[in-house]
Image (cartoon, rainbow, N blue to C red; front, top):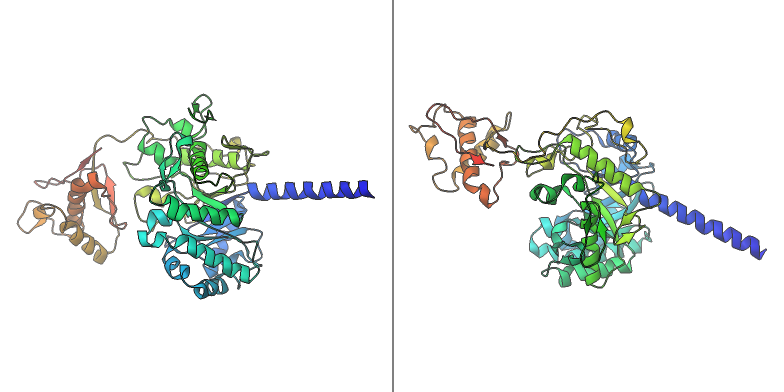
Amino acid sequence: MLKMGLLSLFFHFLFLSISSGEISSQVGINYGQLGDNLPSPEKSVKLIQSIGGKRVTIYDANPDILNALRGTDLQVSIMVPNQHLTNISTNQKLADSWIQSNVLPFYPKVKIRYLLVGNEVISSSPKEIWYSIVPAMRKIKNALNTHRLNKIKVGTSMAMDVLESSFPPSNGTFRSDIADPIVKPMLQFLSRTKSFYFLDVYPYFPWSTDSNNINLDYALFVSRTIKYTDPVSNLTYSNLFDQMVDSVIFAMEKLGYPDVRIWIAETGWPNAGDIDQIGANIYNAATYNRNVIKKLTAKPPVGTPARPGRVLPSFIFALYNENQKPGPGTERHFGLLYPNGSNVYGIDLSGKTPDSAYEPLPKPTNNEPYKGKVWCVAARGVNASELGSALSYACSQGNKTCDPIQPGKECFKPDSLVWHASYAFSSYWSQFKKTGATCYFNGLAIPTAKDPSFGRCKFPSVTL
């Protein structure tokens, strides 16, 4: 009987190990909603399943999406939006109310497993909100415990800019302004509750800003010969992703928390962008996402050099190209799918489809920086009232930004809103790009390599 009991116990633990391993290594998708042309939640859930998704993150607790997920096998991560953190951090009743309104009506029919309290708060919100992150996490966790929802892990997502240094990876260090007051208590919370450090990792960004020194193949997981050995840890790296993840692991270690698990909350590569955004194309996006999925779903798990053999649970960003995301063009082109539901390129989140089964990819044409002049003009078909406001804004900035489009001046005619706005956008961008200005204007402007100048009217330009 004892022998049989031990044998039974062995198979029980083996089953748990295999089950938890398979669950942990499944890749999910980030389902953003910043588009005015996206499919319904019901269709979106089917599309997620059709590309092999096993988990999904949403950036709020949208009841329509949660209802569409009801009864499916998809594990779900929901989020308390940043703007609610300050109030929740000081009021347990508000935290209780949020859980009662956004979790209890759906759980357990919706497999809510993760609850993020804020999204990249350090990177995207005013400083006064930063100090609310951990108190809000505690209040939300208390509210979950009250309802015995202990399976739901609480965390918050962090971008790489929370690090003061990240190279070499062993030098990974959290910024001095947040390390002790924010990150350390957060790590203490995550360690105590056995949750995860939810990390957003985008090799595209360090590569695109330093493409002369970082090899593209190294960023895309395709190099077989390029290696980097950390001079302090002596760990050897074969891709940029691992370097970035390990820099966070070393940073956590320096604060006394070497064992907090990492969850890749977002990773991906843009499939298109503005003319001045190097390497944002379908070929690179497909190559990166297919390769990172292979890494993340490998059996046995490969982990990273600092944590070999460890599972990295993950979400790929994003489900759709979202046309209302602010910022440069890449922000609107991270999708695996177009808004009509068709694939931008073939992808399988399960990692089971070999590359040979996919259609050939279009050859990249922008892996080298664009060299030449670029202008910023009004986009087609935009709202006239919004365009007028943007024109007024551009003209109110800088030194004589809009003098040439005043009545009687060389760029006044043709006397149209689009013409005047295009001149103003180009003039503004040429003056302020060096200080961080973009050619975006809330989606009303686009960069172009075609000179819009006409007759005596010469548009200012930016030289790349």
